[in-house]
Length: 291
Image (cartoon, rainbow, N blue to C red; front, side):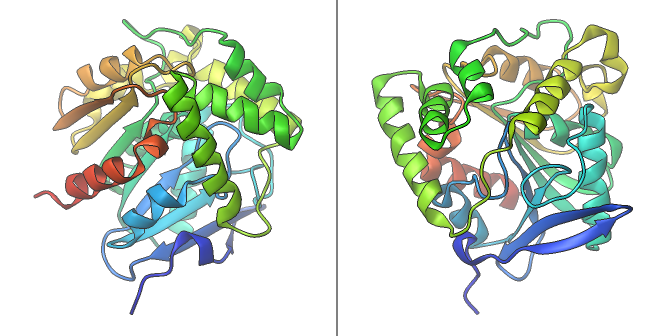
């Protein structure tokens, strides 16, 4: 039976306590699922089909709208540890015993803590365009105008411009790729959720700051990265304006007890994974299928 692809995946819901979470499961019917956690302001409707469908051709895919995001109820948590616990709770509620986990940008913050706080749940970990919490060598993200523009944008055209600039502003070639990515995402599904609204965005931005606050290091990942002992793939763009590329190196360097790989993609920014959709999805497949 042919797999169901991203464009046709149906919304499903599960209650965890008082919150009704939205999720989708699609792709191949058998195998270890791959759960993907999305970027700042993103929802289940903000994945590039050129990237995600090749992954679903050979394995089940799970997408989740975290609390207060997209089609899920509740408030956006102000602590990344609570984002991670929501993911753990949803996977438990839908009876997932083991999954591979992919985290992009702020989704990568949460993915680190899922792997740390529920190690029996995660088989392999992929961290893209992301950073550990604050620690030695970690560069706090600068207040890049393009990122602030993405935070404050409200109209569809402003969001489009901010997304392309913040995620693909490394060069003219990247900007061209960013426009193509936006068009693929915008046309992939009917009745899409919009980007997270202003109230939820401000809470996300607060969670971002809390994750990188030295006074909250006990709730972060940096001092615990040595606890991760599963294979990890770390990847980033060569000129990331949203989260400094250097932090991918620091993350990889501190995964001292895992079989960690580091891949940096040339002439690319935060959205490298969509710019290099075919190449990166192929690398992920090889990583997940390797013995």
